[in-house]
Length: 304
Image (cartoon, rainbow, N blue to C red; front, side):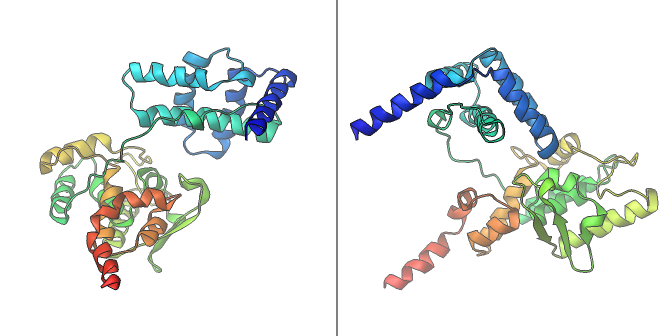
């Protein structure tokens, strides 16, 4: 085992000696050009790249070590950033390195994964059916955001990410079949998904369609501002609705958590919830497993 380790170390040293130096800027630029074309999260990638630049500017990534990566993580921790935020930044660097290896053939080490920080369990905040109804009623009273109540209703009953709903177009909505389509370029995981619609979700879409037909019949987007422009955020109006409904510590993304929680507590299997919400892995869905202890209890009856 020692001999294998020694051989691996020697091989790595030879690669570093023979490889052409590639600066951080060169590697990250290649990745961001790809991200701009292929990723909906390009804007987030750019922000994280700027943060990485403040530490790695001019660094030769051909000789990147875990000591350098851990140094970056330590600096960000001292600045008060969470483990999750730091890991997302580091994973962007890892993705850039992997992309350069694959598309450019560059010999680059990638010690990132061994340096990731341990994250606490994911936050799960969700609403009761009663609180959700109060939130929707409060949203209907915000006249400057006529789309808000329908957005909340659709998010609660499809579990879609806010970006998936903001980008939804009528050409991908089939009210007759009670579905809408999310192509790979519309989803975070780059996986095509068909989203089924229950009566609540259908009602929200029918409301948006009636509003569109009355105000901007030529528009292709489902969610429009009063001026007819596609919307990209509901943060301010959502905060107003939360305050009016007396709900605290709740974010837009928690509407997705609420949908998942309602499904799990209703006895829907985790693997079905995974597919409905478009999780990349069942591991993500498992954060809701504790909401259905009766499922585990029922499984244990086979031992009696």
